[in-house]
Amino acid sequence: MSDKLKIKLSIADRVYPLTIDPAQEEGLRKAAKNIEQLAKKFEQNYAVRDKQDVLAMCALQFASKIEQNGIEQTEGTKEAEERLKALEELVNSKLALK
Image (cartoon, rainbow, N blue to C red; front, side, top):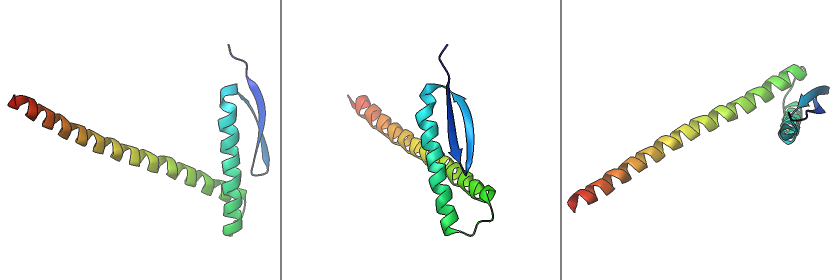
């Protein structure tokens, strides 16, 4: 059984104590830092009523990036499959000539 690590992350002026696997620490700290940076950007650039609004916009921003990456990856996979199919047909046609 792996040892758990207790850490505290600060997001939007609140501290969140977490018990995590040590392998997760770096990713969680980077994620918290990214949220903090984006929240500050939203607070500076937009009229925001409270932290809830800022955090909602951060969540939307990060979720939309994940969704867009998924869409782009799916499109890239389809394109690669089409190219491989065309290449396979070309190879098969050349082999049939022999």
